[in-house]
Image 1: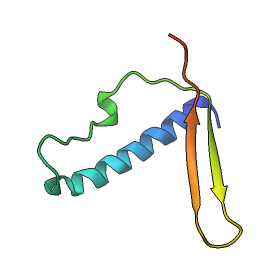
Image 2 (image 1 turned 30 degrees about the vertical axis):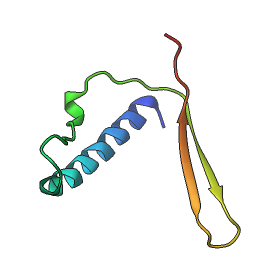
Image 3 (image 1 turned 90 degrees about the horizontal axis):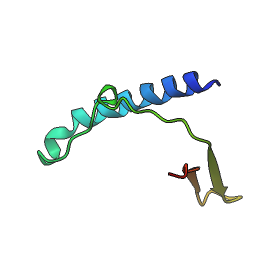
Image 4 (image 1 turned 135 degrees about the horizontal axis):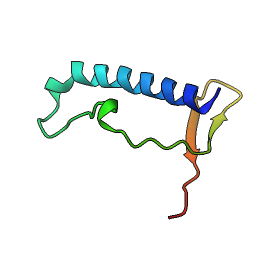
Length: 72
């Protein structure tokens, strides 16, 4: 995927999470707010890796996403 395609997919997923959050917002305090992805115009694409740890049996799986941070 290109960076633009990845960014588009990420924005689509964030919108889905935002809609799910809004459906349950009444159960949370008023100080908790999910920002709309369109309100966050600064977008950075970095190198990242997804590492998966799995057992040979059904004990489970853990996935960790790690992103490289740019020096400032």
